[in-house]
Length: 214
Length: 264
Length: 97
Image 1 (tube, each protein chain N blue to C red):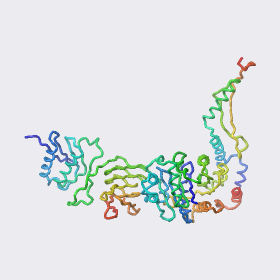
Image 2: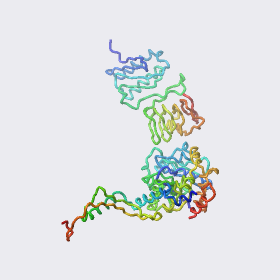
Image 3: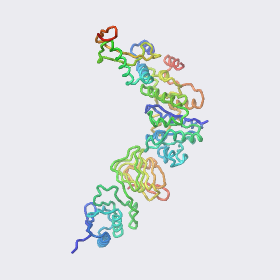
Image 4: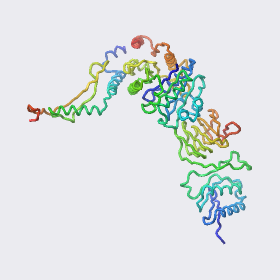
């Protein structure tokens, strides 16, 4: 029996998908589609990280495979790792749906930049996709992203999600006390009494910015 | 007949920004149309002292680069309807502006305001040169310390060289009790050395710290001694003759001696 | 009695110390007498003097200061302390014998 072009393995922190590098990409796609269709129940509704292994993928190829995963399963892909991703940044993630309903379709994938330190006054990040920051965003600093802004720390400076006008984007932080908050074209500031010390996120409904606990 | 003032000091931390905010608010209380320009690109603070930091969308650099109109960048004060702030960019460098651009900006602002107040950055480098480029007049802020007065002297020299007319002195953070004991230089000591006209003396006052923490100027606070001093300064800027505040609390012989000296 | 003691006290008050120091500092600043300039002056003086005397350059001290006695209207003075090791013996032509 010929070697299987696609092998899907469940692992502790996600699933890893072994890809044969000798076969045509279209063949891979077909094999993956088949594999996932058979195991649909297994992946139902889980949040997971996906790792592609065994083959170097171009960005389009990776996106094609992700699209198949999205189409064939109810798996919510939080994080994608390709072989050699250690040197490849930014990576792709899908934004987590704001309300986890079964009918909700996935949003477009933003390219995501990951920053491993906080921002001090005067520093700024400007990125055409989503931004993840591990650290605090201090007063006087700015994060401007066309996608979402996710801060694993306190937001005390200015954050702008959906900077190209996309109001479906969100800003989330472990402590949400921004000097100013912008989503899409909306500009707001959070009154002192509404600031949260618990992990929260801000999103747009209608023409207003709301803040909710995560 | 609008006037463009630069508020400068050389040394940092002597109270330029607080002085700018209070004079601006004081002039606005008098009904003047005032714009405060934060010329400290990269280290903006006037917005925080005014409590307007969360309203900034565009800044001075955006205006100069032409990415927004001047009116879009002006932030209207919460309390005084004729007071506006043009904030500095925080994420840019001082070299992002040239003196010519500042001059042009001041000319534009002059059309809409009675007073344009430029809050100058500390130092004598590019930021200082930019701030003084568009100014007609200068207010030099100093404190009664050797380092601050020395820097003020240097600044006055540079202002004269740049032909900014009649620099006037504000002596900030004076402690009358210490002056009386001879532990702090008095106004007369400082003016004797700097030889420029005095616009005002501001006592070292807790109310300034409290007001700054709240993001409010103290000039409207009737209970604040510093607030009163700023109101006097504003009146002098508008051409009134107001005697210098008597900062001594005690009466008696010390007071008389002091008054004698103040008159000279 | 404070004002009285102020007037006659020999120990100067911090305020007047500050004022005096400022005057000296500003005198330097205003004449723009930086260390380079002082060094040039020093070298020129030494060049002239060493024609006639042997100078101890280690103990040499040249600085800008203030004319003593007039603290209200300070005049800059150049103070030079130049220890002489020995006089040179010169002949009529100014050459060392």
